Image (tube, rainbow, N blue to C red; front, side, top):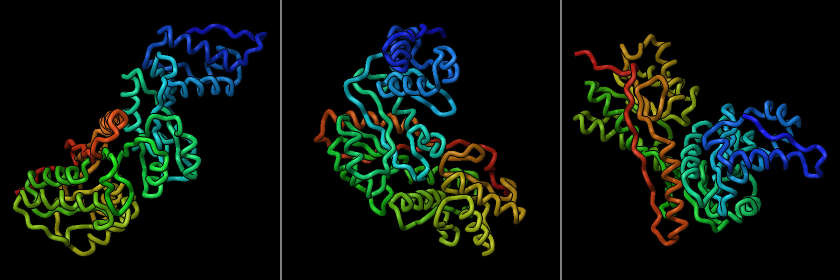
Length: 364
């Protein structure tokens, strides 16, 4: 990829010259949408400028809707149009304090990244809206200042407190995944994976393989509406298989991290409840559960078949298309912008079962 040389005698700032050269390449379709730009270090050598100059130029092109920075992947062209008149804000409320920039979301909260990819895909396909990513952990006044000229917001990682902040902006918004709260919010638009369906199909798979004694590991059964739905999905699959529900087979954790799951399953195994099937709510929790089983010489799937109610690279699992959830959230926000009076909706996206070697038909 070749570029014009800078005019070092010009009074125009070097970063603006770099910006304009790359922008011309994009608007003249010399660099195609979806194409990756050379690494920042290569651009430094090409233009004979510092890394800060290159980053300033790329930052402007990102803000103007031409480029998207993807950590560990590079910088990609996402639009050949000039700066779009309206912006959609993609607002992430990070779980961890060390997440300082939107680009760090993929590194430290990678489970959110597929949603962003889906939103970006929709942004590429329209001529009206651009996208700007924001991290929100400031005061509501700071959030209002950041988004005041935007057309609408797509929000992730919402709590009751941050929901209040977003509402006070007065902008139309859509939330990806339920607000982290002990209640649902029927008055707002939410797009989320179906908490009933994921557990239901993971359990049903084991039922269809002939398992009659199936344990469920999940968390905080009575705290959130979605955990109530997790349990309902499990019970429904058992009911359809004519299997009586046994509360002694339900492992209710305080969290879904590896260590909590390890000790929770270790305690469960100590009770001596027989089981041949096991459904876990999250892949990291399943990892902890398997470690506890290995200590008891329980082999997967020879002794116990395991399924996960969310995507797992190793286990039979219920997989949710999170890129599609991002697309749906974008479409719903456009509907809300164009018709503010439409009734709010909680849109549930079903899961698809992916069968791997962690489950097998039970021996007669």
